[in-house]
Length: 163
Image (cartoon, rainbow, N blue to C red; front, side, top):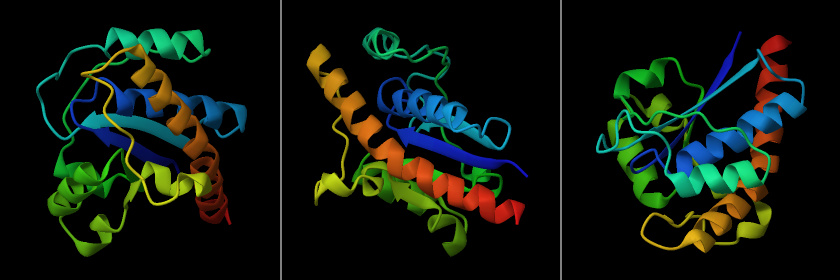
């Protein structure tokens, strides 16, 4: 059975596609291809059909990650097929929990940086859209730092499903 993870930010062109690319690479490195499906979406549909922001693509490529992304809006009906919904900041967390059709679905929503023990109390990944390239680099650093803990949790869930 496939374990499904979806990252969600505002417009699905900066933070969530970055997190999707990083976790997809980590899943492949861990030999979990075919067992884990990684996806992303936005809370809004402003950029639906657009590629990822060119700065996101550039930073990802420079760090060895693959791109190839088309923005879309998160739909409440997706909760039934998703195992984990990862919000990139507390605003997304609240919005997604409000969209959840049930308390069980709301419990699937977590903040990405909650998987990074070094994050402390600030669990938001800042939106780099209105800033310079350094914001995208910082975003990638935060995503990479949290991806280790997230992968560990995903691996536990996948192994639990197989048992």
